[in-house]
Image 1 (tube, helix red, strand yellow):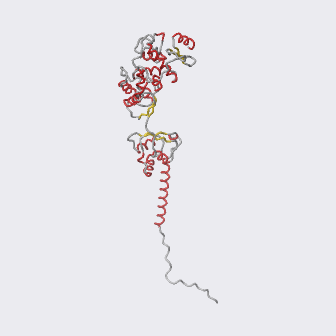
Image 2 (spheres, rainbow, N blue to C red; image 1 turned 180 degrees about the vertical axis):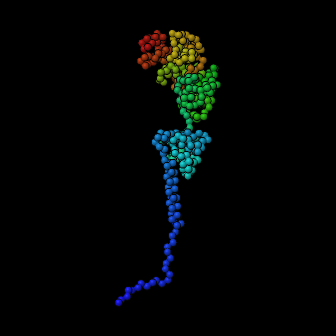
Image 3 (cartoon, rainbow, N blue to C red; image 1 turned 180 degrees about the horizontal axis):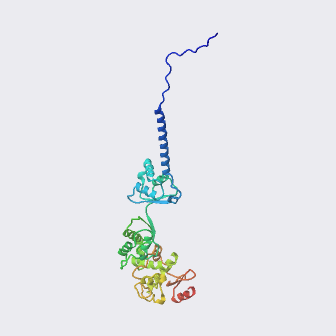
Length: 356
């Protein structure tokens, strides 16, 4: 009988059972939680930098106005309120990290629609448009028209502007600024006072009074007041710049000959009316005022509007004769769109009947 072979027992004591490590599992869980929180924070932070939803105001271009004393915090809050960005804190953080938080300047920042916070930060780090409001004063406007024009351009208020216009002094005996505010396009800071605005218009007009021009006017028998007054009449009468030297020559000839100037715009000004409000049947042309150039000879006491450079220069470079070489004394605007000039009254009446 064969006996089974027995497996020898190992030497020494049996191995100890494997010990569990619960702290490692806890650490792995904690690490996973931290990663999830970090991922969520990053996702949330990224969401704050994205462009606002298409329904927000940022779906349209926006101009951010930075006034003196405005801070980045104030600008960021304004952008959030206007729907341009999602988070003012995110914008400020981006600009601080980039070192551009101190670059915000007074002016206008134009922001296209659909920018994210990083793109907005790029825009705010650039140089803004100058913070000015432009206003155009058309040629031939009267003093009374200017407050409305300036207020429409969001510059000043009507009453202070009117007061500043009345307080100014022109170069005529009546001291009115009528005629001495140059018509042009002006850039003004929004905070410009009424006095500053009026002073700028007056100063620009003074630039027209060069020594050479004043001397030329004197040779024609005109001081600065007379020059500007006559230019304002030409401005009101001329249908185009090309006509101005012709009308200027006629007025100068009539002054020399002692003939009444007979300008309808002066009558309207003296009555406080616009030209299209004149009523011959109501006796407007026979009502005597200092500005009625039908009832009085010579120049009116001052300008009737604010003439432009072309009108001012037309007085200094007048066209004094007709095409036939005679002294030009009369003109009429025809329905054919042309100006008809004559040297005698009979020919003038003929053209009135022919072309009007």
